[in-house]
Image (cartoon, rainbow, N blue to C red; front, top):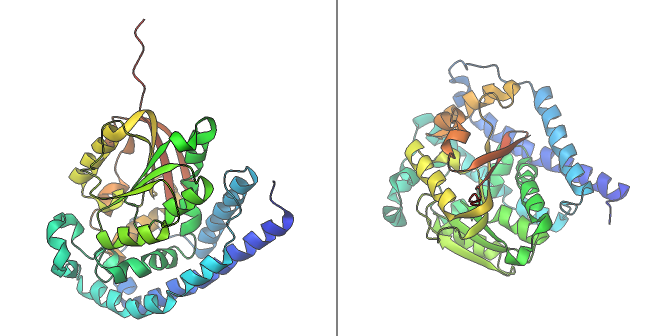
Length: 348
């Protein structure tokens, strides 16, 4: 059934409200960190104006609505869920002073003191984004999604949804019940929860290195059928060769060191079936959206992202050399790249 004009207006109203709500939280964090902003070195590229960012946000939501009209997914209008998520506001605001303190002191190693950190790779034992506990505690997992929405002023959900578009197209001529999707770095399960709400018969695996985040994903997906969970690293996945039809990675690769990034890319090619696809949704890179190159300069300086600069200049086609590059799509500050695993050539 096509979306109605009323639904379109409700959708526009909700997105406007989300941007305003999370935008206020972003401004609160920026105000608290004003000294850190003031200490920024001169960027290589100009930082975009608020007007330019507002136009790009409007384009993001306009495409989001066109995807709804095309029947790729239902109108994302769950007011009750939005209200529940908004309840993390207090915890987010309470954590801001701790984040600012780490920014000022460049403190990013507290996470290593966590008891369960010893079994994790060294690159993972740090306070990414200067957030409390890094990715290693239940408290961090509880407010992480709010932190991301605040960082992107309420646009993160719409950017994630764009990563579903190639999934929907791949499934057009396939039986979801016989198709396996792997979410690499699934985090709290936000993206996979959306996918399962649209494709409940799809078989899925949520893989993440953080036990607390994976536990939260299990709660989020507790009513979904056909979902398994794997606590493991992207570079050493406990999966059989050629066992996955669709692999997805959202905002993970920019947090991996170059050598680990290459190992993860190789392992993704290993687990994909011939004819399968890999969808990489991550930060835009230099040159993808030139007006926003200045934001790429600023981001790793303000938030602890030690591997971001190398990722921003990585040749993705070369990185995923075992796969064939199919397409790129820019969704505001996110680039969605699709790669295909070639099928063996038939002998004549």
